[in-house]
Length: 113
Image 1 (cartoon, rainbow, N blue to C red):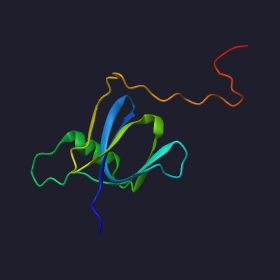
Image 2 (tube, helix red, strand yellow):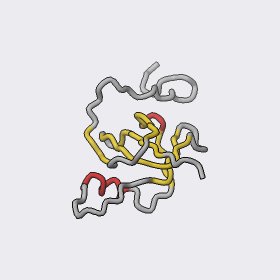
Image 3 (tube, one colour):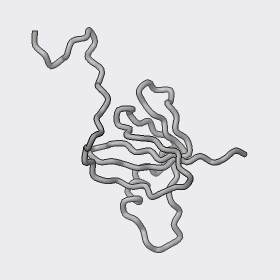
């Protein structure tokens, strides 16, 4: 069996940055989406529970695969080991979203003629 790959995926959702870990990340079959599956969460044997990781874990409980809109994905890194999944405040910075497609016909739906 080959080496086990772990990917750290950071994406924006509801004004926050979500960080998750998964074993498989592909461009997927849906145009404009990143497919993420086989989620990995830290298996801690200690009594201390991280509420941030628990929120992410409960959000993806029972999910086998998810599709993230490409414009929401900040970065995907291949890492050697799993970190702690978390949700943090989105502070903007120098990251900007990809341009959104225009309405059919090439006109901006918000403009008036």
